[in-house]
Length: 349
Ligand code: SAH
Ligand code: SF4
Image 1: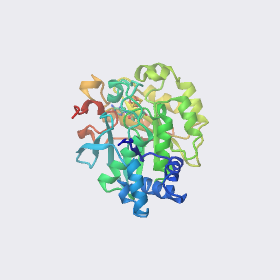
Image 2: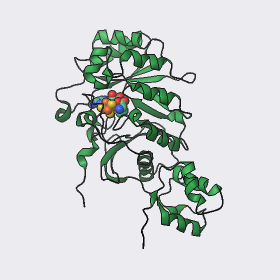
Image 3: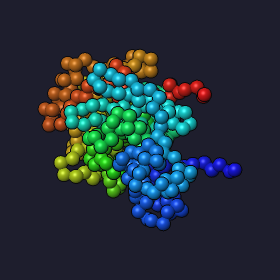
Image 4: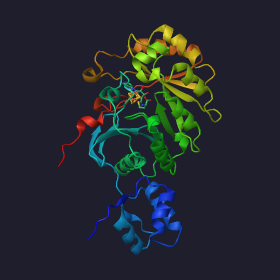
């Protein structure tokens, strides 16, 4: 008997499901039913799709599976933050995080298994490049967390702030966003980028456009290149110009993330330059005190609290909307820049 590889339905588009279902059932609405089971009700198996006739479920199960990345470890912090290690089909391990907030849970997803951008303050970047996740792996990561945490149907925000640079994997991230948007408004989905200019332009053209966050981290081209090698490719001036024409709905802003590094980008001068850079862009600034890691990030440190509040004070005095993001999940290494899935790769069975 010939065994045909069964395709994974997680991540399939409406059109792909329509093509598959057309071979099995004459009713065009079946594909939409399956799509809803996968993207709204987060069904874990074809058998759960109870409004499909039994014979169709059987035929579908012969050709297809519903398979999310497997959660192999969960670590929980005192503040409720949960960090998940998820194993992909090729046994590469990635990480994702769920953070309980007031009135919702924020889910932080990975878009790649490493990161080639190589920012010197980021563990994922220091460990280097990985591969792109497929749309199904990104969406499956999300489904796996919702199912495991009992969050199906609950209010969630989604941020692409885990491992990887989402705009270097835009087609797959866009597919995942499209699937997530079945249950979550794109206004509650944020894509964070290190500043990939062509990717930002493509994101701007998406029909269901998520919110944009940009990791700025520096106030001069020279300083930025030192911290984020990619900055040499996409200079600050070009990045800011692109952002000035990014389409925003009324009252919406672009978030600028600024990882604070003691003695490197935390001077009064930096604080005075920043508002000038952002002129003409509806912006809010998120100051993120560095999450240190002696093993991977060497001597880099966060400024002390007083320096951070003085820096924030200079921004506020210049009418910049600024918040300090004290990272959640530090004690389980689930905070920004601490995700490093590949180190926990399991040996083959
Ligand atoms: N690659 C994308 C998204 C993932 S990184 C990006 O760079 O935007 C998500 C955020 O974590 C970025 O804003 C980044 O600047 C921040 N970050 C990285 N390493 C960090 C660290 N060690 N401490 C605090 N924030 C960090
Ligand atoms: Fe990659 Fe973002 Fe980390 Fe930079 S901060 S290395 S872009 S994941």
